[in-house]
Image 1 (cartoon, rainbow, N blue to C red):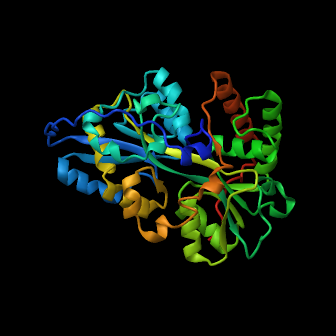
Image 2 (spheres, rainbow, N blue to C red):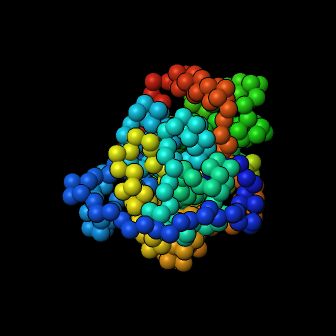
Length: 365
């Protein structure tokens, strides 16, 4: 679940960036009858409802697999996982490209890439989009029961003693570390050892007051609706799901600034079917298909042509497509240095080791 992060939000939304050059599409080779692709993503990203049509059109079966965190996907690639197509967060691209774990996209097989908004092209993570194709984007905020805690406005409110035992968070390393940094007034991607020492103490404190919940809205939202939790670290789908079940739900973009993420398609170097994986990307970039995915998962599509086809209630929802004035204060995830990656991993391990054995327990039904 993660964001054009090396650029300011204002530049991202307002300026538009240089488009990648595209070659003319080549005629697709017929697929063998037993061809099967493995498509890995966060559980809510795969949009399985649209995949049977791809199989019907191309004769290629698609097996979906899910991972819990972006870091889990990166680790799986490093350990030799043989996925054919994977959804990644772009802050991990430079390292994966340098390690030879991704292959260049042959855009002759992805003519529908022309529909991707210029705002998401040719960014510093992957100049020329040689290894990645933009997919979706969104914000991380606080989903709040305003009838119970109308005063929540900041990331730092998560450490307010009044919320102890009533907070739900996700097991997302970069997000929680960034949230802790912002709550302390530090840059969201800081590698300063002094900042990170303070973050570790901050996370350990949060771990005693919060519960971990799964990444899917279906796992996280029931506790919010019941009042077992009053604040959930979450995303647009959580908000839309919760609002359908309770009128007193707000999506708060904290005053310290929201976190802006975005996802990309990439083809791992160990893919057994790289050309068919590219054709799956092309299918998923058809405007009507991209619109169906956005309607299903409630996340904004990077596909500019799809936006007019998205259901109006989704398209006009400022939680799904935030206005520019909110994005101006957003924070992006930048790639970490190798030393920074090690430091973050050490902090995360020490934090997880500090958690009480009951941490993350689901609320009673």
